[in-house]
Image (cartoon, rainbow over all chains, first blue to last red; front, side, top):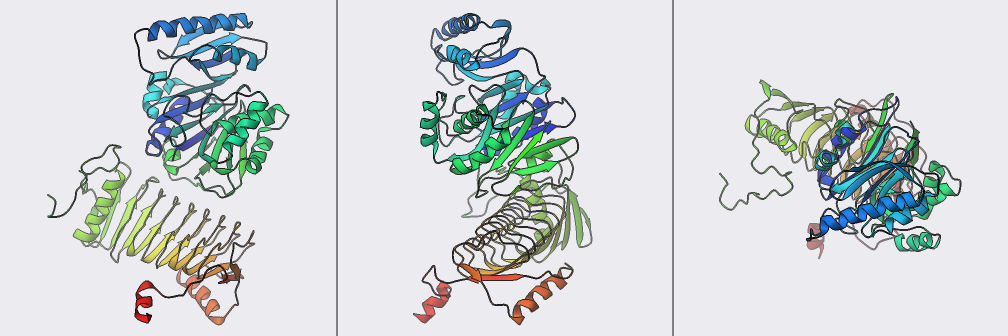
Amino acid sequence: MCGIAGIIYANGQRDVGRDMTRMLQSMKHRGPDSTGYALFGPHSHLYVMRYTLADANDPRDFDFHDRIRRNKGIVEARLRRAGAHVHEAEEETDYAYRVTFEYRGELKELTDLVEDVPGAEVLSLGHSLEIVKDLGDAESVSTQYDLGHFQGTHGIGHVRMATESDVDISGAHPYWAYPFGDVAVVHNGQLTNYFQWKRRLERSGHRFQSECDSEIIAVYLAEKMHGGASLEEAMRSSLEQLDGVFTYMAVTEDSLGVAKDEMAAKPLVLYEADDLVALASEEIAIRAVVDREIETYDPYEGEVMVWQR
Amino acid sequence: MSAVGETRITYDARGLAEPHAEAPRVAEIDGERAEFDAHDLSTRQINLELRRLIYEENITDVTVRNPGAKHSLGVGILARCRITFDGSLGYFGCGLVDGPEIRINGRVGWSACENMMSGVVIVESNAGSLTGAALRGGDLVVKGKVGARTGIDQKGGSIIVLGDAGAMTAFMMQRGRQVICGEVGAGLGDSMYDGTLYVGGKVRSLGIDCVPGEWTDADTEFIERKFRIYGLGSPPEFQKFVCGKKLYNYDNLEPSERKLVL
């Protein structure tokens, strides 16, 4: 089933970590397997990269911690070798890391170098995008990664009921639009021309980290935007080219967009106010941050809507 | 204490079924009227309180304040009574009801009034998709707009929408009537078996086997009567659509009637 939610504020930064947690927690019944956030913090001249070196449910064998420590060293050495000046490297859990660095080269080259390290997966990379995803409900992920204090301008999130692939961090949303900085996607639905698009996009040099059909959308949008399309144009063309049932949200550094398939098969409730726009699979998620009677509606089939912050 | 032969749910892995919940007894009762605040109550507590008031206390007019867009509220009420929800409902609101007159001063999510048998439900704002799914009888009036697949598999009753409707409205409709005052999305009446559709605005496209119908005096009488009963003002000009009866080989008999004929 899965549930998606997004929020974008009109006036600068607010408690986006807290608000997204409330929205996602209220939709726990739509997907208790994993929860993910794509949050936009303050813009920095530094890059911020979130990556994992193992999955939450990987077996903890005797040399697990040694191996992770060794691989973390390799990742940092590779970052330096690629020309990045690391500012800060934080350990979020014993397998998830956040690193900030100065870098002037190609993001694809850097990401490929990092992901070549055994077990490494780059969750997000950009000047303000931070993707956090793990197993469990929103409150446990928020507590684990201390998202309650995360200030930001906008964000999207996802609660997952795994249907198309395994319950692991790779299969959890949001997906970063590799190798396009500061773009992420959450998706509720199924894509039926997944393999066709996966083969096409792989031929043009993109990598897929998971077996999850939703990852296609992120990479598809990235490729279109790399070719010069705006987020809205890329999303409109996805309605023609992606088959299946979907409501998905995409975010860039300054905008948040949503698209619904031609059949309106997956739900979406929208609330637009002067100070924020909130949207979610269920109104109850919006009411978790706006606790009063509000005017909401379901956008129609085939609609694409984009808001700028 | 459960009755003989009754199965009680005791396993609740997701923490949603609340098998041990009881009616919270928070309503203020005044003669045949009662009112309670649902803000801090769970779905099950709200429904248990509603059932206690209607079935045990014989209350005929209940107001529920702050329903907070919670799901599955007011379902399975099988009595003549008046219920007012002072706010929005989530999914599956007022499903499976038989008899009540319900007013929702807000919006409803997906599948509102699914399988309603009789009664009246008036939604003051918008409704989600699948509104009135498998409706068997009664009147469902939505004063805002509705999502996709309104009245999917409708088997009777009337759905009246003052705003627009989405794609595949009246998909596989079998009986009953739908009055959509605004515009309608693609695939109107797709694969319908029977029933009548009235559309006031533009139709993006007709579905398979949905064709324009011939307007009769009975149509005028029906529209005027419904608009008068619910105080909806003067009706706009409508186009009528019916089933072309080219898609299926079937008869109009209910299974029980077919048995008699055979």
